[in-house]
Amino acid sequence: MKERNRGDIVQLGSVAGREAYPGGGIYCATKSALRFFTHALRKELVNTRIRVMEIEPGNVETEFSMVRFKGDAEKAASVYTGTEPLYADDISELIVFNCTRKPNTVIAETLVFATNQASPFHIYRGSLDEK
Image (tube, rainbow, N blue to C red):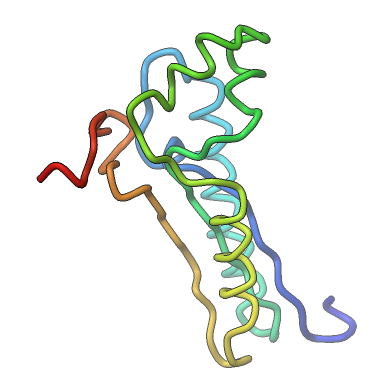
């Protein structure tokens, strides 16, 4: 990328890199480290046309919960019960959007939640249509 003086680096972070939660010590620390690595990398490459971006999703329904709960499908499903979470394609659309901006534009950080989420701890579990 440096030789070509162009390219996009997209880091997949998490809201957990901004706000820690109980039981997520290692995950939160890792995502926090990724966040600061991304900030440093962007500053190191500021004299190039290489764009450095971070997507920081909240509640996304993927196989991650199965890994997190060591294959316990019931616990994994409970993370999303009563919610309408984000999905992998929501995140991939953001990546494509960020990477297709004009060369003079970098969307450095994208914090994205499902409509029913405001933080790792603030998730509404109910129908949003009942309001």
